Amino acid sequence: MNRRETLQFTGRSALGVIRHFLPGKSGGLLAVRWNLTRHCPLACVYCGAARKPQEHPELKPTEAMALLEALGRAGVAEVSFSGGEPLTRPDLPALAHRAWELGIRPSVNTSGILLASHLDRVQPMALVKVSLDGTETVHDALRGKGMYQKTLCGLQAAAAAGVPLKLVATLSRENCTIQDVAHLLDLARSLRIRALFQLYHPHGDENGNVSFLPEDKQRKSVADFLGERLLHRDSAVDNDYFSLRFLRQDEPVAPFACAAGKLFAVVEADGSILACDRVGHSAIARFDGRDFQWEARMQRDSLACHGCAFQGSLRLNLLASGWRGAYFAAVTTARELFAASFHG
Ligand code: SF4
Image (cartoon, rainbow, N blue to C red; front, side):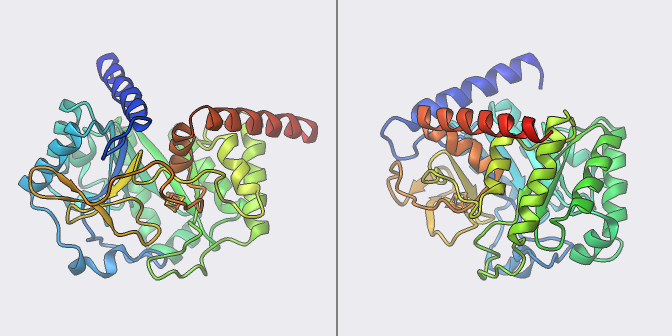
C-alpha cells in the first residue's frame, strides 16, 4: 500500500470502529470475507464449499460490482475474496481495482494451484493468502495428489512477480504437528514471507463434523512451539501472543461475545450476508441489486458465540470490546511473555 492508500484504509477503519459503538442498523461493518464462488477445482476433505455449488448461485460480474459499491457506501475498509476458489472468477482483478478506488483494501484467499497461470488476477491485491497444510505428504493427503507441488509453483511464480504473499495453515488433527508447522515456517522464511496458523474451528464443517479438530495436546504443543519461535524473534510467524494464548487454553474460546455480523461479516456467493458461516446463522442482510436490505437490527452483544480462536476474528473482537479488550490483550500478552521468559 502506498501512503495515500494506507491513510485511507486507516481512516475508514477508525470510522468503522467509531460507528460500531453508535446505534445503527449496519453498525460499523469493517471487514468482509466474500465467498465469491463455491466452485473449486479441489475437494479438500475438511471443506464443504465445493460440494454444493448449485445451492449457492453466483452473482454475475455486474451484480458483484454493484455489491462492491454497496460495501463501499457501507464504510467497509477491508474485503477478503474467498470461496470456493476465487481465482476461477475472471472479474476478480476488476473487483480488486474498484475496491482500491472505493478505499477498500482487497485481499484474496486461495489454494494457490491457479496462481502460476492466473497471476494477473492477484496482481492488484494488497495481500494474497495461500493455504498450505504442511509437508507434501500431509498436504496431498488432505487436498489431492500433486497439489503441494502445484501450490509451490504458484507461490514461487507469485513471489518472483513481487506479489505480497502470506501462507495460511488451518490446523486440523492431520497437520497440527510440530513437523508440519516447522516445515511451513521454513518455507515461509525461504520465500521471505510470513505464515499464519489458524485453528480448525470448533464447530466443525458444514455438517457439524468435528473429527478434524486437533487433540488438546497437539494444539497446546504447537502453540508452545510457535510461542517459542516468537520469543526467538522468528519473523516468519504471523500469529501473536494473544491468539497463541487461546490455543493453549483447555477450551480455546474467546472471553467476549463475538462481533460477527457487526464489525465483520461474510458475504455469500449469492449476495446474502451472514454474521458468520462457521456457525449456522441465517442471513442478516440481502443484496437487492443496489443496496443491502438488513433483516435484523444488529445489536451489540446479540451474538453469544465465543467459539473460535481465529486470529482475524479475535483481533476484531478485541476492537469491538473497547477498553476491556485492549486491557485483556495487554495483560494476557504481558503475562505470557513474562512466563515464557522464565522457560526460555
Ligand atoms: S466466535 Fe464469531 S467468528 Fe468464531 S465461530 Fe463464533 S460467530 Fe463465528
